[in-house]
Image (cartoon, rainbow over the protein chains, first blue to last red):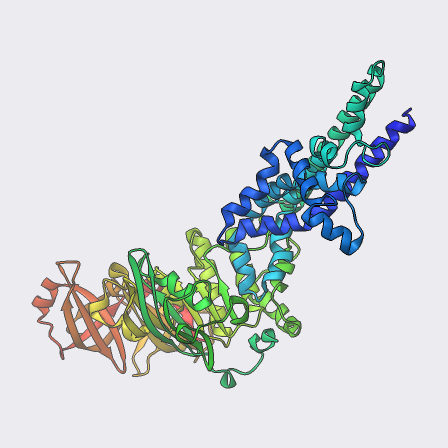
Length: 231
Length: 379
């Protein structure tokens, strides 16, 4: 039903988006908790930095990644010399681009759901002898699960649809960094490939719908579990 | 590790659980400046109108807030000392806290809520406490299904199962309707007699306080206006207005002497040999009992009257009297009956007509039916 090139693009996209979300999940949740529950100097600045990819043109983000993580970039040089890792033009590079672009969405969703957890419940847990870590893992995070799920799926979808930063930082290499949006773009640029482009378009819509429905379903299940038989 | 020394499996005598605090805190225009020693046993009520600083003080004791300056100690243990920069975190204080709202964890069943802070050796207490609080049938429910009173009982059990060295309760009856309130109050009175740790009980309701407290600290504008044993404070005529005004009451203690099943009455003997007749008590003879007598339920006669519906006439001596500070027609009286004190409120006119003066022998008349719902067994 699907051509090999189509399968390749889909599998690559899922791999890259999945890796991106895997990389940003823990730091994203940690930062969201910091923003939701702690007051510190430079909080507004940190908040701004996190949200930057949301408002910058993706090409700018891709270019900044290239400048910092490229072989001659300050971070890229260190990575290459220390670990022999080079990110540009690799699928890992595409995952970095997707992760950076998806990061603000993840942090926002998780922060909102953490802020919705009643601090009075956390205080009650402390009076019962729970230290901060136990409060976090037994009260805060479980109660924020609907938001954690929504945030993760949203970040996954964003990483999946990443185009500008990816093509700038990781280029458009078939089988390595040609994800679904890049494949679609390539087809549109090629005369006589309108049908193939239309097929990819339908696939993209289908994947997006499936992830949205899955997220809604998971979040609702989590909410129901929280308010089980709560009438 | 701190969990271990926080659990009160040790006999009360070896754990000096007296809470002592001497704290100052400013919050906007309000400032709290309190020095208070809570005895190591019994219920100490923090009483006062809203805004008097009761809850602020409780939060400082619990460690939920930091004092601007001062010290909080529990026995030998320093919980907070601003001079030395000590602020023991909440989870290391070993105090049980019951909040105004139950604050049950909505994602755990009642059982898991109860065991959340329970040390491993708390298992043995679990069944007894659950039975005492009457929450056995709720264990497998989610908190969302509980009524207000049930949720409070679970919250109280949850706090006690951590094995605290002291229990702090912040208006635990707030927001319950009259009947649920009375029910939970009865559970609380029973519970506070059963547990061997001191309780600090915040409330603005005089009826609640007289039912449950042994000691009383009256807070006003962030200061302790009066502090002492409840019975002693309730006898102070100058505190009438603060301690409930209209509904002020005193407590008499006695022993069950005999029952009269035909009329459903019980005779209670006071220490000086005089007797009171009250509605039938479900207690065996010689059980000690405490009777709450409202100041408005006492009438005064100069001789033991005959042909009267009053079932109770107690010989008493007028000890002190003071015109009411909020009711121009009324006079507050304090009477001595044996070693006990009883308060009464008369009109000033009656006082003048009967020529009541301190030292005068009178008869205090109390209607038997006025004892309704004000009886409580001791221990």
